[in-house]
Image (cartoon, rainbow, N blue to C red; front, side, top):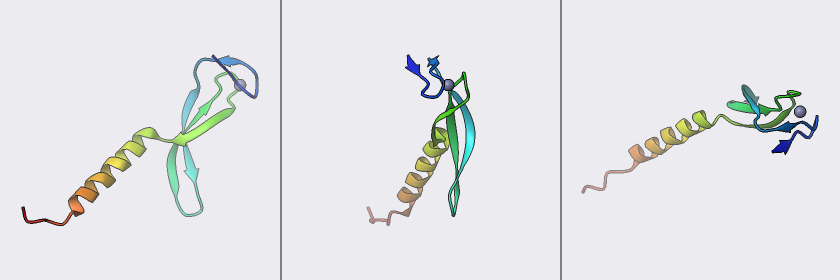
Length: 71
Ligand SMILES: [Zn+2]
């Protein structure tokens, strides 16, 4: 088990919530992970489902851009 660095509670899970991550020129879909006892955000990551879909979409676009080698 891990201990929350803010409240010291022993936590076996974190509470996840969707959160917008904004930069100067764009924003991303993110997920925050918070202590279930005191709600302190302990970490933020890019939404893994959105990230997976973006990688798949980019890989497909790259494959479709390949020049025809004539075979
Ligand atoms: Zn806590």
